[in-house]
Length: 401
Picture 1 (cartoon, one colour):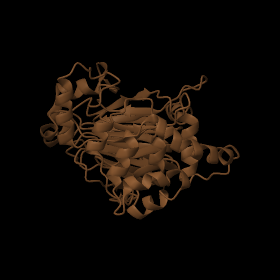
Picture 2: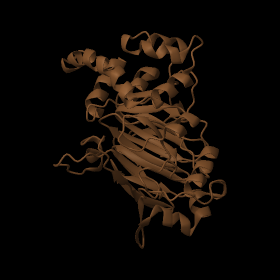
Picture 3: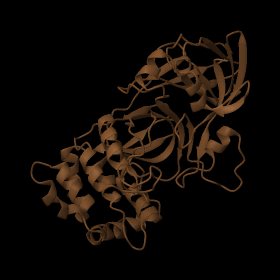
Picture 4: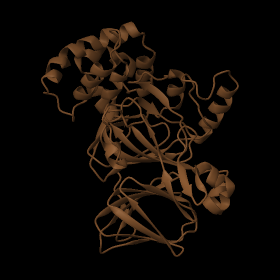
């Protein structure tokens, strides 16, 4: 076999929605359990399985038995016989943490250093869980909201005219020092955080409860954060970031790339996400998870960022590619109807595909397999295959460029 049905792993994080992924997978969710992410890859935190003639085994073990054949010679050589990407579906029902990710070099240094301590790789207070970077690209499946990178100097200067934030001007200075401003906020004693944010919550709360705040305003997300993350009367300092970062609305079918060091936070919506195979995260607020301020400040990009919305680049009548500079992965969208089919080129990379809408038949090596909405499959390198459908169908494909 060169194509295998793949069974992904659901992550039930508290911020996840209760409908999209269960509906995708045709799972009844009477108890409204949060289905946050569907993972398709080999990451140890959620390794997918594949169905073989001899039974079900992990995708990682399938690759380990014949890495060059499964991954392709170049991918196997460049990525130490490992699948270099992790493919996901995310349903963001409540906002995720303020976060960023390390470069490859920083991850290698940080992982080696932390491994010399007695902190287990799985420990909640661990910062580096592996030695890999974690660039990531996402494509929106619904209207999607997120924070992405620091605003311009002038936009931040305007934020500091908000009455509750005027005392922060001294840290920003006349020339606009984003680093010193953010450092002051992240290292500020909790008592001072509370003193600054209490008047803001008092001002926003009536309009938020009366549903008068629009999602296009930072005030809306700040009020939501006050509601979700105020614990024992203490306000989360991540609320400052909501005003300092770009608030981005991505429409269905568009995407965005998160490079190393770019601060970001997913706020609401459903997306496809493709990333390097890593779980390294620096967190800066809006979370109960481990926050490592020194590492965050060391590796964050404190430049002005102008968010670049990705549009798929059509490479055929049915396939669009979301191009990024990442060497680990490439994400494609494939749209079919009964009059069109997709024929693969002889790719030198392993691939994972998921059907988001419709039902398809995949022909390869004089064989055929059928897949319905929510199902996914792994394609070993150098496999030529054709996808056909009798109805309208939407797929996403992950591979190494």
